[in-house]
Length: 97
Image (tube, rainbow, N blue to C red; front, side, top):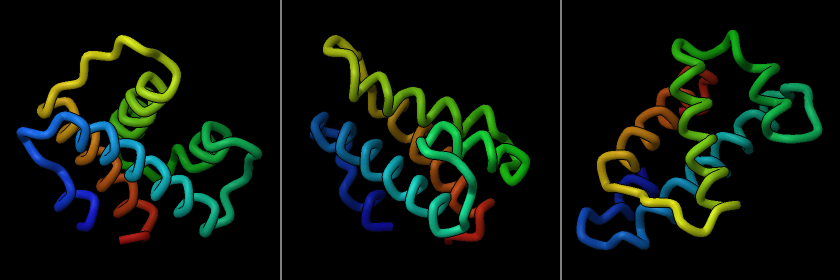
């Protein structure tokens, strides 16, 4: 809820922060539930069957990776909302929220 509330349609910098924070939250939930793996990607693979729509969760994580590793990512508010929705559903599917 805090991440969603930090999102502002008119403040583009809030979009990136929200995605990064949601990704961290998902990784913490994976760790808390003892999914195996040294990296988040490995933990996500271990949790794949836990999610109703694993492709959406992976897509959101890939957006986070683009933001972290590429300099010319064109992020939109709509893409941000879709990614946050996927993270939120992933967290629900894990029983974290």
